[in-house]
Image 1 (cartoon, rainbow over the protein chains, first blue to last red):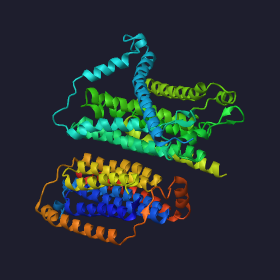
Image 2 (cartoon, each protein chain N blue to C red; image 1 turned 90 degrees about the vertical axis):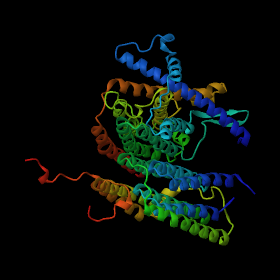
Image 3 (spheres, rainbow over the protein chains, first blue to last red; image 1 turned 120 degrees about the vertical axis):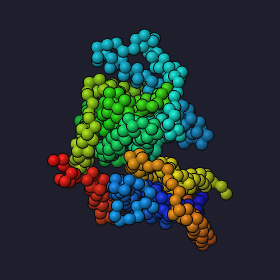
Image 4 (cartoon, each protein chain N blue to C red; image 1 turned 135 degrees about the vertical axis):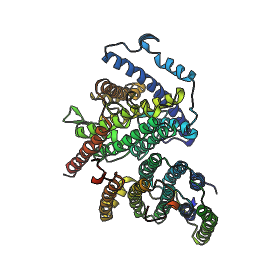
Amino acid sequence: MVPLSYYLVLSGFLFACGVAGFLIKRNIITIFMSIELMLNGVNLSFVAFAAHWHVLAGQVFVFFVMVVAAAEAAVGLAIIIAVYRTRETLNVDQVNLLKL
Amino acid sequence: MALPIWLFILASVIKSAIVLFVLLTAVAYTVWLERKVVGHMQNRWGPTRVGPFGLLQPAADGIKFLFKEDLTPPHVYKPLFIAAPLIAVVFALTSISVIPFGNDVIIRGYRIPFQITDVNTGLLLILGVTSIGVYGVALAGWSSNNKYSLLGGLRASAQMVSYEISLGLSLVGVLILSGSFSLRDIVNAQGGYFWGFIPRWNIFPQFIGFFCYLMAAYAETNRIPFDLPEAETELVAGYHTEYSAMKFAMFFMAEYANMITVACVATLLFFGGWHSPFGEQAWLHAHGAPGLLVALLPVFWFAAKIFVFLFLYIWVRGTLPRFRYDQLMAFGWKFLLPLALVNLIATAIAIAW
Amino acid sequence: MVSVHLILFLAFGAVCVAGAVNLLAQTHPINSALSLIAVMAALAGEYLLLGAEFVAAVQVIVYAGAIMVLFVFTIMLLNAGVEERTKGSRVAVLFGIPGMLLGSILVGWVVLRHSGTEAVVAGALPGDPKVIGQLLFHEFLLPFEITSVLILIAIMGAVVLASKPATSPAGKVE
């Protein structure tokens, strides 16, 4: 039997890796993927609590998180493509002026 | 009686080995069937020299692939170049694990089903495996470091992702009628007859769903009329331009294994799986026929229906021209998706009535 | 007492941790994308251990099979290359990694120290599709409808943002 805290520690570690990736990476697509990693960590935490408290609403909430992640990924990647078209770079350090 | 754990594992290993062997042989002989049937449709013989009726041609092809030079071009991205055909083949062969081939068979008091594993959400597993199989194509196109491969890979994966939606939606009508995701339950819900002589197969209430499923499946497996991404006259050879010998053979095997899986799922969901239209299985069971006959007759019917589907696949391949890419995407998004939604709404209203 | 549940949890957990660390360590975005796919597949395994079979299947179909395909497409289309090491990124690594480690160790210590040791039984709460469907369409109907509108807005937004800009009349050759 696995204690609930093990699941929470794993979920926290995934979230922490997501935050670290967001801060240290310079390629905008990788930053986006770190955001997805954070969302996945949170999903694990939801499902673990749903199993712990025997409330199925936790699993239903995971759907909503996934839907929001999908919508955000679609719009975010479209924005990345638009930025790449004008700035010709994917490095966030070089997208630092409002005017081209 | 439930199986003890060691017997369960042993039975699963034996079943997996048998199914894998049968599947790989079926893949090889589907290639033979295609060459023969397309040949006869084009008023020529097809393979005739190797063995009677060319039946040893797949063996000759296998030996050829093993001995060909496996060339890895210098500028490819090696890890993904080698991994992509493996991904394609592994996930094409995985989805056979939830497909039931027949009824349960009782050996010495233990009940062993004709299925490697009966998962509660078997249909979702097949859809999931199909979704992951897209990576084989996309990564093959990208890792080849070749503009034709990249374009072919992008087009193929965009096509597969678009038609996955219609594939999933066309199956929801069947799910509403059967009430379960487990493939065995869906087949069991198709026993019996309407008005005594029409079998209760899902094709009869769900013919629109079946049409959507067929179109979406042809597009998922990249077969004519949807095979622009790998057509020889269009993009050299699309995403498998740079592959030779065994890796190319793996893509080939993956495509035909996907065809067989699609035929299996269509049989299970729309054509009653292993139930025969004549109803002799119940009669034989009641009148005490030998156990071997009762166990193998459903498998025979299942195989016959799959053969009909494969023949339909090959017949369409020999007959129709291929879609242009924009026509293909427009067909998937603007016609097939609304049609699948209409089917879903009509089925839901009919059931709720 | 080592049970099969614990072994499977540790196996899937090890894949998750390795994938997450690999995402940070790799310089080429395609490798990061593939490690993220591995993390998602291992998470689907963890969901199965917790009894959420429908959520696990949807995780594979939607997250690993569609959203990550979108990421891989973008990387392939934009021909993203290896990241360069700039001054800003070195500073970030210097402060970010130790900071993240410190924060996660702190949180982990608090959670492990102060939470109860009740165990989660494997498959305690079967999340079969029928029950989830009933919840989704009865109690959570309003969020469900709102998220469908959200997806519609996202689709329209993505199409508009990614489309090529229309050529202005001044660009026409006389």
